[in-house]
Length: 352
Ligand code: PMP
Image (cartoon, rainbow, N blue to C red; front, top):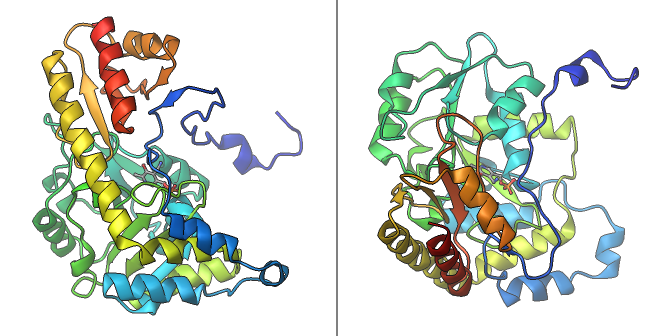
């Protein structure tokens, strides 16, 4: 441990991202990336960024991107916050919007960055257990005094969605706490809470380009909510890094929204593969949770998940296994292209 570290740094337990090994031929189904490349229009737009443009600082407001997102999603530019991936957007939400007077609430089984940020920003939190069906139960959040609530919808790593009506019930029950709905996977069949942002000034919806738009490497995420929430986040951003979005990212992200047909086609291909893989794993005896994401969460009745993950790895396929006691019987498998899905199922058939 370095003698030069601040007391805060000594207390941190950083998030451990899924591995990114660089082994040729590896089938990488561990971090929910999109198996398809981004639209050719994205690549063309990034190539078209001039050397002279890169010499200059980018637009601090990322207006071109906000205009594009506003037009597509039917909101105003001042209802949008953009950042370097939704992880960064979430960090700004944690800094700007959560009250410190009562604990932040999130599910016990969820995106593991939430407790990491809570620790970093000195926010007290409570983990609310999922119910026996591995679902978020709104009743467990509605009556508790809290400084904010955050969960993904659909949840990760379960893949299970929460109906919009439940989110509205929660917004009504907790009018004084900000409710952050992390919609990283919503495009794969979830129900967006976006239509509720006008009615509920305490709702923040967070999105990413990393999953459905095949741009995990570009680092683009955004949030939509009441203009006052966004203004709070902008105030923190401008006190921290006033140029988070670089010119290449803005050009690529704008172009992605310009090719809606490509986006829809690839999302549909992944949804189709997910449904097929679910059936095939069920035929092998797995229990598969009902996913509305680009991954599935599956459990074999007898063979330990850790053993299956190791067996897959020996055969150059990597999936995610979590050590959390409630879910250590499960494998989280990202949906690959049809060939990758086929190999995954064939290999699991050998191992089971
Ligand atoms: N939220 C959830 C629920 C996620 O699973 C992820 C991806 N690991 C993120 C946010 C972050 O995605 P990104 O920073 O790439 O936008």
